[in-house]
Amino acid sequence: MISRTQSTFAPPVPEAQRWLQGVTFTEDRPLINVSQAAPVDPPAPQLRAAMAAMMEEPDTHLYGPVLGLPELRTALADEWSMHYGGSVGPEHVAITAGCNQAFAAVISAICSQDDEVLLPLPWYFNHKMWLDMAGVRAVPLATGPDLLPDPAVARQLITPKTKAIALVSPNNPGGVEYPAAVLAGLFDLARETGLKLIVDETYRDFDSRPAPPHQLLQAGNWDETLIQLYSFSKAYRLTGHRVGAIIAAKDLLEEVEKFQDTVAICAPLLGQKAALWGLTNLADWLAQERAEILDRRAAIEDNMPVLEKQGWRLLGLGAYFAYLEHPFAEDAHALGPKLVQEAAVLMLPGTMFVPAGDTSGARQFRMAFANVDRAGIEVLFDRLASLNWPRRA
Image (tube, rainbow, N blue to C red; front, side):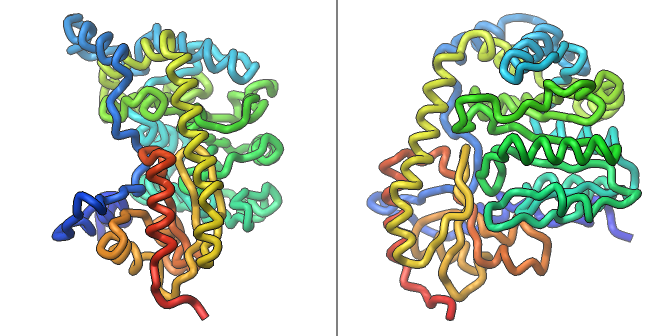
């Protein structure tokens, strides 16, 4: 017998970090790290000042309510209702210690051993890892050249053991922003078949569309089907403070409360207070952050001709990610360490986002560009374009 953790693979980001061991980078050719989608800059100065004051509040250092601070739950419910044009109350909101924990809590609440969850390919590896460790089968949902899941294809994969369809939009790793019609089609399918539709919207704040990305919260009894996940980490640079959220039915959150109480008890209160302060004070600052990320997205598009001349292809782009097809003969996983050594670039191979044996991943890389500005993107693309490795026949 193997343990639950032995049933899954090693975490990809730490694995890729090990490729850096023993490699020296020079001042004129520093490492360009596009492996991880986490802001490396600290929170906004005004938020850091507010957090310093919060540290002096005695309750910051105590346990809080298991499902989160009431003020934060109310503020997020109000913001969610306004943004999506739906009706969300604080009873629909739970605060978790990060969005990965939100996903883990939801799966624990809706699934049993040997149940199934549909995951579009390429998938977010931490979702796959948690399903493995929960004894739940991740069913690969193939996508087309546009990386979009098709409700008709999903329908063919549903069995009596299927409990949910789990999505990420804007997508990690593919970057694509799921059109409202695609989300509506999957919502209708889930409602018809009695499944839950889990939509991880960690990167919602960096969606390029000016209008809300979907109207799912405007559906009657939306909470019978829809579960949304969110992260404050990306919006307010609070990655180390671990603050995520679940928007779902009240009775589901009662089950989540059991999970939360036995795993983290509550999300860290300093992070929760910081998230609340950000929600209520940093709208203009967040708009500037979004504009910067959208400019970096545009820089990817502007520089793609340099790579296209060398046989690269852009498969998906949005939020923090570009998903690329490379032209080389070797497998992307073998090329990952070579990129570090020969180009001073750390980038995750597509093999980390597909099932073992899926050959599509061997030709793909995920580029997480949130920490690389327009000038850095130009340097990055020049380095990739200069690679003179054997090409596919």
